[in-house]
Amino acid sequence: MSMRKVYSELKGLKVKEVPSYVKPMLSMNFVKRAIQRGLDNYHAKYIQTNSIDPLYHVCFGGMIFSYLVALPEERRHLEHQQHAKEHGGH
Image (cartoon, rainbow, N blue to C red):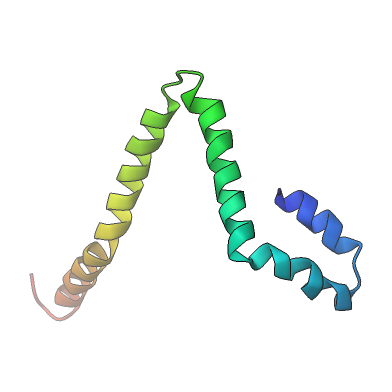
């Protein structure tokens, strides 16, 4: 379900009705079906069409993941370097 559809449906509800509308969407069964539907759509859009896009998705996803994993260490390194400059280090 797209966010636009959810938003438009929520706009028409009263505040008391929102929990009963949202609660079924938070169940494990609903989440599993939504993920399965997303995977099926991905398969139909990219895999069955013999597109090269899934390879790009894996490559760029791997680069982003690698960057995010290394980011805390890089930040510590840069903070240490800045601290050393401020206190007469290298």
